[in-house]
Length: 310
Image 1 (cartoon, rainbow, N blue to C red):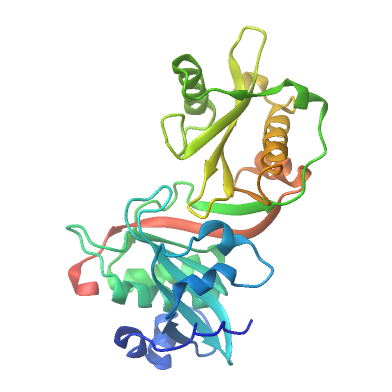
Image 2 (image 1 turned 45 degrees about the vertical axis):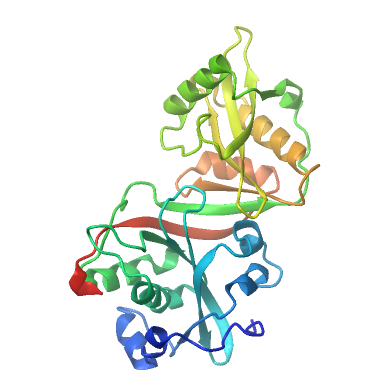
């Protein structure tokens, strides 16, 4: 992947002061060719990187990045890292690495230099990295005295997308829009999510959840639901897919997710979603619906970072 014009231009002093030898030492437990870590002068250029993969264009909007960095190996950009401020679920700057896992340590190190974080409230609050880089980055952070906030709490997750309308199932006819602004409906959705998906992030009270779809049983109870949330980039992202335990195994989640995907693809060119990596049932559903899993992530906030690590 060639660097976009302007993406490997003038680097900040902090980034340039990290030599290739420094980065090689930081990559604990990995045998990796030297990487050239540089700042990206025009962060907005990342929206179209890499060519043919939709993640960046779905997750990034022009003007929202605080900073960005590229990792170049043998003259080609193999990974990038961007820092966003107050976006989606997080209210503090967050770093995300996209591309070759081996570059994660060098890129996050550059972020920590330019966006220091300390115990009494700092700038960089956490990161998302390729899951294959987890052990290496953990070892590097241990040396700095930095610990994860969410280790062992479902932080591994996968990012999926589709641009193809799924084939309807017989239960599509039972799916309907739910009025999440109506108090009674919102309460039912919230109770369902708390029971069936306690780690959900988008409830009916979350302004990012713009629309809800679901199936209501004969008693009027919401037994399966899913939310449409809008990213800053303006693309729809499905969240809070849940089915009541008493109604699982009937294809309700397949119908609700498929129907909502179908509706959204009449308005948008693409639909995305995220799922916990250990949710095999969800993986089966999304695969049947034609979703593609492009990225396997590990995300966590930083629980502590002593000033001496900066």
